[in-house]
Amino acid sequence: MSATRETSPKGTRKNDPEGLKQRIFESALTEFSEAGLKGARLERIAEQAETTKRMVVYHFKNKQSLYIAVLEYAYAHIRQDEIALNLATVEPKAAMQRLVEASFTYHAAHPAFIRLVSMENMQRGQYARQSEKLKLLNTSALHTLEEILLRGKRQMLFDSQVNARDLHRVISSLCFHYAANQYTFDTLFEGNRSAEEKLAYYRQMTVEVVMRYLKCD
View: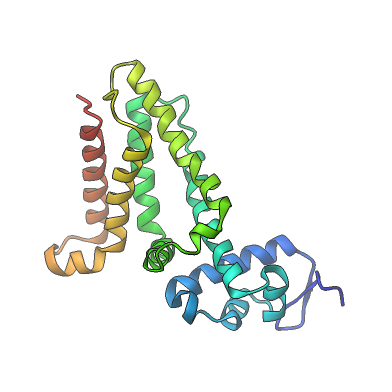
């Protein structure tokens, strides 16, 4: 049998390497976000991806290489979500508001991404540093902000001193905190609001904080 032909645990043959990789990425994202790099098992990843450990190793060599590939996959996904907003022709204030809302919603809707990034920070970013692709992938986040900022500054809507890197940190901090700290924050400080009410409230609060940081009237 060819090494590039997938054999599922049930014995059915498929010749869809890209589809297989997608399933492995999704399965591995769940596994790494729950168990971390040390606790993750290739056998569990393979089972959830409906393939074999042999095929996972064939495509990604080892667990560490797969983990780095999953980091790249996870960041590529959020960056693609931002690009898909097509904000280049949207008025600067509205574009910024849409970007912040979308970022907040994305973080809240992708807990596996939040856990994966949190775990990588607990590992002091040692695996993220091994990927040149990660830096290239994430330049689009700053480019998107820079484009909106430039248009807004030309119209004297945004503070000319604000830069894309600092603004990205402000947005990311608020979005990430809501998603990563929701359990402890809810236990300590929240009342009986529904999940939908909290999401809408803190998303709007994040938009308002960002717009005030930009010194919009």
